Each structure stands twice: as structure tokens, then as C-alpha cells.
Image (cartoon, rainbow, N blue to C red; front, side, top):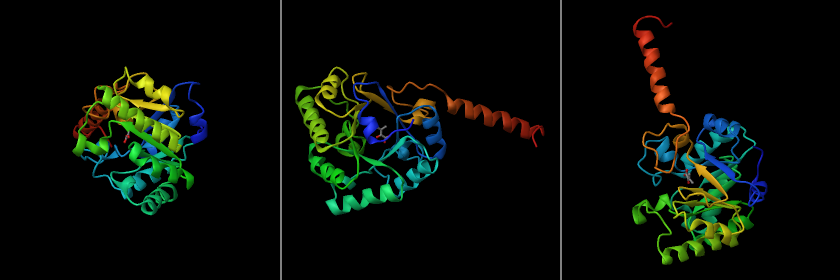
Length: 255
Ligand code: KIV
């Protein structure tokens, strides 16, 4: 789907927005041909592709390597790159340097940054420097070692914090924001409180759009998260294909 940050932002209130991750040229082509409005090169590449236990070990060089592969598929769909663990908290000149590399070497058109109110000033400065930013509030997988994978928005205090985070990132100028694993009864309040589209994952139906990890959607992930309902079972189909071919080779029926 032909898209950019402005066309995506303009979809709020018009129709639901479809976002998917991709990590290489093949998954980018699948996402684009399937009609995604946005392709995220997520740092979930760590768990889904690189065999890591979480996203914390993913580096900027790894993200640039995978983003460049996605960009080589030349999708018309906007490509957003996930800024890896810790980098958004560096000094602003360093942060700008990381984002510059992401756009220039990785071919992404925008960066996604996990975090709330504390990062709003940096987000505003990046946008001022011409780097579009997608926010990410709610459960933050990069904080697994400090906060765990904990559903958010279950108490009034946490709901207040989420609103502060979402509104500050929105006011800083984010063109969209991921809302991850937030209690679905509270999510509509976040969506109503911000001008940019909210893109939910594991947060129910109250967002302006949804995002999924493509490996979870296609059934490549052996144990997908409970909220991801796979639409295919490519792991099972691929194993069956390998077994069929292996049997042919062993019985000398394959050349
Ligand atoms: O890394 C990722 O894939 C994400 C999600 C929002 C899917 O951040």
C-alpha cells in the first residue's frame, strides 16, 4: 500500500490501519502484497529471527542490516525502523547520529522509539531535525529486565501514567504510536486523548489500527503470544515439505 507518515496519520478516524513487521526482503514483499499500511522492522527480529531470548541484545548494526534488506524489496509502504535498547536515552547528538544512520544506511523513513514522557523532548528534537518518529507506550519489551512483560493500565495510577506518556509523545509530534498490552477497557481513552493514530498489539480493539509480528501471524513462531491468532501454519507446512522432500531423496525419487 503506497503510504508515508502523513497519509498514515490522516487515516485516524477514517479506517482501521494495518501494520506488520518484516525483517528481510521476503517478509517485506509478503506484507506489502497483503496490503499492510506500514512495515515495521521491529527489534522483535531478535526473538523471531536471530534466536535471542528478548530484544535487549539487538544492536543498531543488526537493525540496519535487516532494514536494508527490507528496503531492497522496494516497498511503496512506509518502512519504520525500531530504535534498539537504550539508544534513545543517549545524548541528543548521539541519538541524532543513530537515527541518521538508520535512515541513510537502513533505508527506513521513520524510527520507532519505546518510551513515554521522559523521551518526549528528544522525540520533538528528532522531528524538528526531519526524522519522523512513531511512539511506543504501554508494555515496553526493551524494559523486560526492569519491569518484566507486564500488562499495563490495570490500576488508576498506571492509567494516569499511560495517559501522560501517550499525550506527551503525541504533543512532541509522533505521527503514530504503538500501544502494547494495555488493558482493553482503558485503551479507548488513550485513542481519544491523542491526535495521532494508536496502533494496538495485545490491547484489544480500541486502537486506530493493529500491528502484529509477521512470524506470529503466519504461524512461523512455535509459541506465539496468546493475543496473536495465526492465519496460517507455515512452520507445520514447511516441516511437512522438508519431510516429503527428504523421503524422496532417501528413496532416490528426487534429482
Ligand atoms: O519489535 C516489534 O516487533 C514491535 C511490535 C510493536 C510488534 O515493537
